[in-house]
Length: 464
Image (cartoon, rainbow, N blue to C red):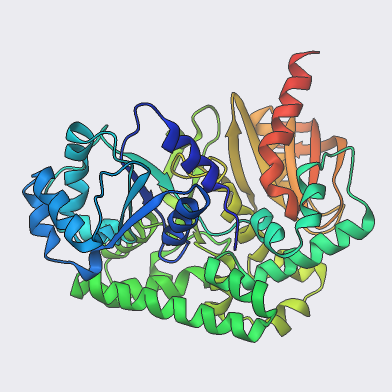
């Protein structure tokens, strides 16, 4: 069993006095159904689960918005009173009967005491062919992401998790713990965070078996595209799916995906996959103020894949290749570390809000500067670099800190945590400028602790 952080959210949602129907969103096979079943079991709830892919005729019933009739049909399927005390109604694969989404608002109005969770994958594919409006304000969303590294550690080596959650720049973990976590992080690069892959590795400790799970998951996505996408979009979606893992860390050029296809069609395919959480767009932002996305350029972006394990499978990287990489290759080749960090940064809101992660790019005639990521926390803008070695080049970061007049930055690398005051003489068009800022360096495996560490730094600064 893999414990998910999302279970805490579900517990809070269930206790709400004004609870709305909840729609779990996320890519296929990130564990939505398992999460609900596990939550119901651990909280002693009677789970009334209906897989809507097996009952397509219900779409016409949902379309009537007659809640009493809908309940009678659902009770005929489950064989139970779905309104009973201690019950939880779970409508799975809701993309198969999209009118169920519209009907949720009427459940809220007529039967507000029934806790209802709906879950679906590739919802955007289905909704593209329907004209009804979503029940805005009548439902609640939670975006489920793949198993995080901390959840992975809790599943495989739970005794090590305390060294992550207690880590600070001034208190590194013991060297033995650091080495073990670094090795687990390398295993995560291969296994990834798809729950079935993690569970298989937890049980069998077989990397060959994990590859079979990856192959099956990618096959499922191909099948879903054929089932839910428009026929004339199918080939292009498959091309984009195969292209993204091979372009990690690189600015997207549509011509690299398909030279024969119009840019507008490629953009539409990318947007569709991004909405379905199969990938995440990281747009360039000028980063001069908050919110960062207000200055984002939607035509200049990089793409993250939904999961690092699946990305490596699509690229043909096996465990022999990943385990044989030295530290510099692991961080700099193929965008693996950038994917790992980005995959966790997009979930800093822990499912409550869509991802808001940008990057910064300055393209010049003779030289370019690029920051891997830029995030915000409160009123702070935080540049984030992913580097190898303790003294890796920070040229782009120096350029950014000088131009934006900022004094705090974060670097992720393979070393224990540290904090240093950086002073650097930078040659600019106006002459020589001195750049000074605080740089917190964190090991890659501590990325989920970034909000806590930043908040501690903000609190310290505010008290000075």
